[in-house]
Image 1 (spheres, rainbow, N blue to C red):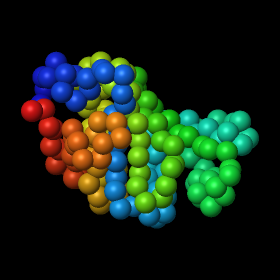
Image 2 (tube, rainbow, N blue to C red):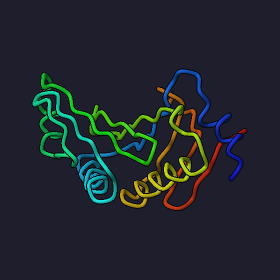
Image 3 (tube, rainbow, N blue to C red):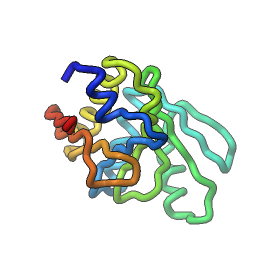
Image 4 (cartoon, rainbow, N blue to C red):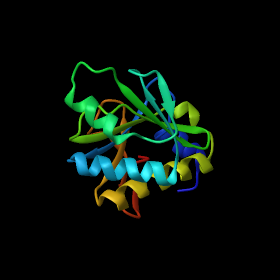
Length: 154
């Protein structure tokens, strides 16, 4: 689809909420593959609240530490897709969840960058990737399986 207005109104609408990116049924090996992909192909800002440092690569040892030490300060990663920032909070290892702020998407180029990111994840993990409205796993706005993309613009 190359109608930016429809995409903005149906998928990247601005109502104060975020869009979630989900990969379900993951494990620590999938997360490691995701982190390796991010570190190899994307500009990353990895923040560790424990050290108050930001690095340009995801430190997977720190991610594992965060999951095993429940009282540990949290970590976040921001993946830079041009003007769009994908945020990851590493909540649990059984699903990958990222956030997108729809206010940052302003063009078809931004949308194309997001689709490339989703495809890269799907191909790397051999799993479906979904974009949903915030905190609603079943309200799938975009579904990606490798290079197949389904947009729900109804």
